[in-house]
Length: 437
Image (cartoon, rainbow, N blue to C red; front, side, top):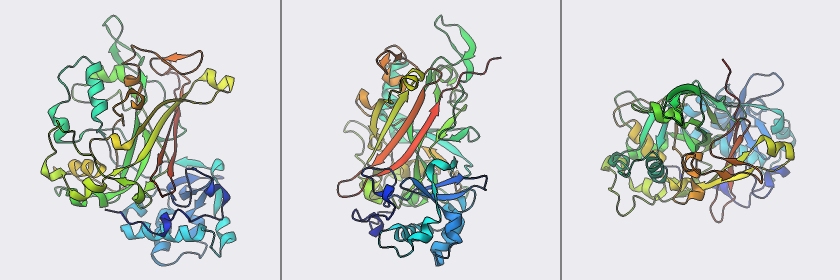
């Protein structure tokens, strides 16, 4: 488990790049998240976020400023995806982080050379950061599970399986898109207000505020990853929106989610590495006193002590009317990753517990990160009692479900007293009208 706190996390460290020193900015020198971007028609390449700039790792690899393992890691990260860097030993990404931190710090002697490798963030087009071979979405919030079951008419409480294993389904990789690309309202089958099953554009479109993890290196088919080793297989975390058509999902969900989920998923272009997140690890609160404990193969003392992260997460809305009037986004919910019942290490260990082989670049999600209070409910389903109670989104507008033109934006910030907060960028998408047949 990467709990190493070193000079790259030093709250006193500052960058010669002024925008990296803005109070409570997403990308201070303590963060250094990774991405893949395009600019000026050039091939995609890896980058590192710093202030309002992207450090071009292809240019940095050619600059002569890096050596040894840091240079090898930079060359791996300079490719069209970050998979090669993810597949490298953990020491490689660690070496790259330390070297880049030193190059960007105020005591760097090569500021101008590094400046030549910077590109303005608003001038680039972000791509997915990795080639994702497999995508699995978990259901790890007890509060989200309880509310959704109750809203669907179940009075049996949370199923026993929820406390025994992190529940999950295999999602659709081909419809994952980076932040800024927009979902189209999907067509599908669902029950209308009269109880008739119809085929029409979804009338219950929802967002789901989630955090996901990228797999660093996987396992051989048939060989489970032990919980004690699971954390070392995680490269970093990224914010994402599991757009959902709840009416379609609820009608089809006998075997599991399918067309109600597979039409679109927004993923932030930024991966915040496990090295950067070391100061923000916190203890897992464990099951509530009346909940059954997890099975021994999913329990590890180190994971219980440091397996969670203190990360604030928010979702906001901006409607077309708000855009026209120049109104700011309206906060819909504020939650924290600590609301999860299971850690990412437990998710990964369970995923491979039957010998399923994960691969470098695979992505798995936390499920909707809802807390106990309705103000921390992380989807419209919970916020509106499944469309029964409208919520105010502006002085003149209400919503029960998302309408065409609604823009949903996620943000997240890791915090811990004595350290500089680090952000995850934004995950944003606008609901586009359904295609007319």
